[in-house]
Image 1: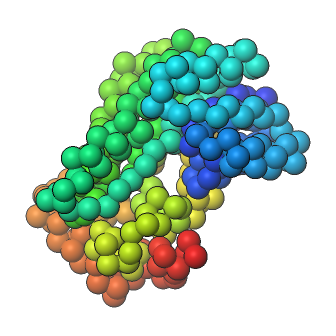
Image 2: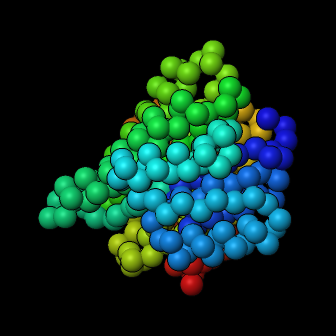
Length: 279
């Protein structure tokens, strides 16, 4: 898919953060964009931004945990544009807390509903109207390959997203529909805004986050080049390689990353920390 001119791109969680950046990036490429998120007000702001770029846009306030809302979203997209060329499953939440925290079971359930079951429902609804050369992009995380302490509830779900993506890709083999899973490291979005620096997973404390725009460029490139899996930044692959070789090595790298000099040596710390970046 070398050109996105007039392609139809549906983005969930599009009202802010990575979703907003992805929607704007595809609009810059000439795509027609369908925006979905719970906040009608924020969605309307992104809709205005895309209109200002001269791109076609349809905003559909949607809670992806509601099957009725998901069905209405897909129907609205197909009624307006006739089909979908790129589906970007980005909607979701994340919560920080130890496994022995009283809220941990609820954190897992809430994150599963929003970040995995919502993704599954949107994908299943969209599959019949995806065009033959379409791409499904599922936003996971580095946590979908390696878990950090205090982020267990989120990592459980991101591992689920990775597994869902791998299974879907193989089931769609030969159909012309591609599946890409994106694994960004810490990104400067509101996901962890409510966590204090001391509450963050230790490897995140000194890590310089990616920008949402960095991730959006990675998504567009993944779709254009048909990439099955993208880890961002590439330097994070050292952590995942260590984990693949041995959990002991993965844990040692994760522990080492909590030290600023090590994070800097590995190229993962060289500017603002997360809370500095999000203001």
